[in-house]
Length: 122
Image (cartoon, rainbow, N blue to C red; front, side, top):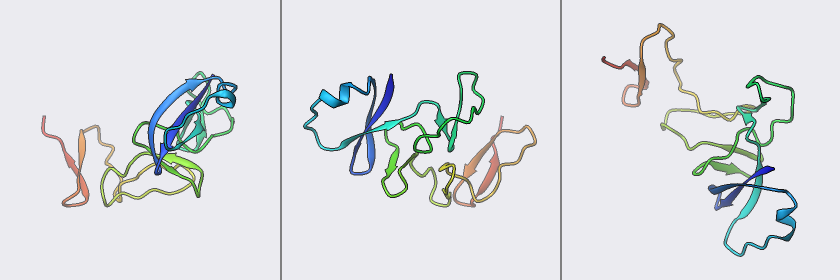
C-alpha cells in the first residue's frame, strides 16, 4: 500500500492509503492533484520498521500531513511555518528556530516577541 496526498493550491487537503493501481483507474474530478508521499520519510531521511535510518529513498523530504505545503519546484512536503522568524531549508525541510533550544532538561517554549526560548513555569 502507498500513501497519497491530495494537493490543492499547494496545500495538502487529504491523505489516503491506496494501492498504486487504484490511481490508474480512479477518476477524481475535484480540484487538485494526488501526489505520492512516504510514511517512512521525515527530515529528508527514510526510516525502516525499527525507526532507524535504513538508506532507503526519502520520498519528497517529509510525509505529507493535512495542512502541509507541497513545494512543486523542489518536489517536497513540509509543515506550515510555526513562527515568522523560523527558517526552512534543504535537505531536511524542517522548520528551525533562529536560536537553538537549550538542552538543560528544563521545559521551554518559543517566544516570538523576543525571538528566543523561555522556560515554561512548572
